[in-house]
Amino acid sequence: MRKSVILTVIHRGVPDIMAKLTIGFGVLLILLGIFGFVATGSAHPTALIPAGIGLLFVIFGVMANTENSKKRMLWMHISVTVALLTFLGMVPAAIDTIRLSRGVAFPHPAAVVEKGALALFSLIYVLFCVRSFINARRSRLA
Image 1 (cartoon, rainbow, N blue to C red):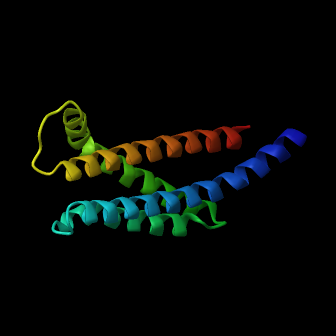
Image 2: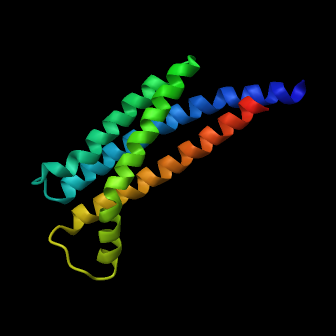
Image 3: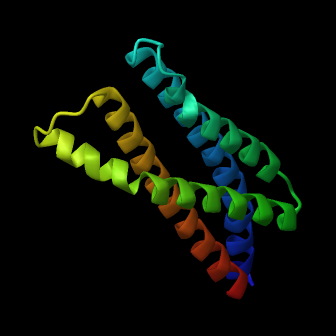
């Protein structure tokens, strides 16, 4: 009896943490987009793409911050899917970031670094979400 009470308390705290993590991740991407835009001399509006993606994550996190478990699961699965697609789309950029660190010249190195950071942040977020999903399933089965 005591073990199930502890797991229930822990499980109830996890969604709040993941929703807040999603909002924080969105804010991080917004800051990355603004930094990239300023670093490119405010001449390339495409540097703001991470900020647009970050705005989506802030919305996802706000929507996931609910007591309704079905809605929370829906919004968290949507957010991890978008993060995974973002990471997969940025894999070539991550490779370019490695090439940049080894001395290969690129016309816009700030853009390469920004896209590499977007890939890394997205991967880390996906891993946190997968870990959370596994823990949630284990606590439901226990």
